[in-house]
Image (cartoon, rainbow, N blue to C red):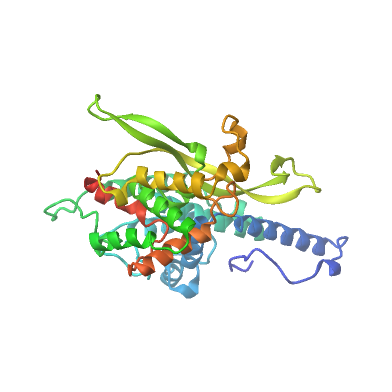
Length: 389
């Protein structure tokens, strides 16, 4: 067979021209159906998985001067089929090579982490799945995921964990946690400009939402999309006990989580079995729930409780949520679906693109250059915690 990587489709013939009674045409038809199904499954993955898969495909592309091209030139492998031998070589290569920056330049004195080695291994198995769909005899002739391969992955992951946990022997101090991050260039003055820029929007709702999101993210260190998915009912007053076991601190408890896109069949907003007469919609499932305790900050511009007070004043006194939704606060059904950051309707979550544009515009007004936008604030807590009130 041709050792080119299947692309998930075959345009050699149309269905109208296939004679399903002919054995050769029927075999070609089943092969095309199998390859298309394997390729279609990969299109429904989350963006991060697609990015890792693209990196693996690039490594197996001869024209990209990556691992596969070098191994073919050295005679270590004979083709681009993902089998036991090529997997063992690729795992060793991935475990020993240094990390790369966004421009794919090697970063000296670094090694890939254990999780990245595992991701690349399973990405290679996905590539093998496409190859098996193209040639069903590969499973018997050239096995891939054998016990030897899995043991090699686990041993390389353990080596990576040990190597990355050790400090360089010539280092006089621990590794700099600020190095190679945006905090290496950002200053306290720039952070202050960002906070002021969030308060300088012309539209009142955007000002309140932006200030609340920025301040609460800085206090919690969570992703921006975590806070965007928060419901009003998931903010509760709470008495937090200080680590000294005696001081009681008033706080607000927030149940935050990440939202990942999924799919279900819906009728009138409710999940239903999959039947042809039902409408197909995208839904969001919550993963990685975490409780965040928001406490007062000595700086009013950085205080999450102050930002929540401004938000509630806007929501109840200016926006008049109770009158617009005719809420009976004694009935949970009337208000439990209200989002903290909402779109045109209080029950519709704030759009992800709108959140990104809000942060992007704010950083431009503050004249701060950063690749991180919505996730910018989550990096602050580990490095700036000593400045918290």
